[in-house]
Image (cartoon, rainbow, N blue to C red):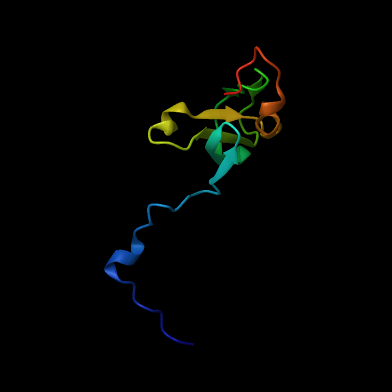
Length: 97
């Protein structure tokens, strides 16, 4: 067995493009969105899904999304996974965001 390689001082910092927790950027017709899946264990609050206007119960897996622009994290919303995937199919009169 070989000994562990010593870390360099700068290696412990994440690069700026690193996305944590399964987070990814999705391209949609209405722009790029950061999407982070949440397991039921990590959510202890109830949220209201903007897609169906129903509650996302505490402990249920769901998604957190926000626009991929500077300051977009202020616009985070919690969605049911299916509601997020079908949000562009909603008719006029309902916000897509």
